[in-house]
Length: 124
Image: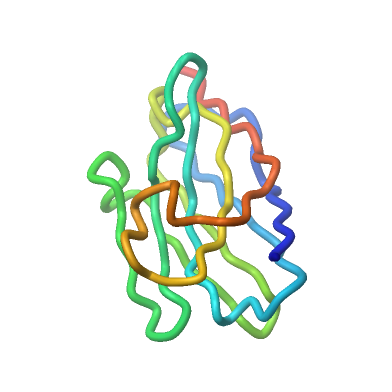
């Protein structure tokens, strides 16, 4: 099991940037694919971005492609989500998650371990 703690959320204005961080502990972090998901009130948890454990392959939801960047630092057991040009529709609770494989990485069911989430609110 991997323990995950997100940080970096907050209230920002449209067009601002924010960087979310996720600190991992427990099993060998570098062996896990890491993902970010988000959930807005009344909506399901949606895929945002993911990064593989070995070659750094990434995938993004179409809604954030070109604006968000996922990265990881295996030496520090950290994963990040740089969010630029934020929009009101990006408002949600953002969750960090760990998956044992990079199979179907855009699906929440592929992830075994989840953080508690961090709130991001984009005000217009």
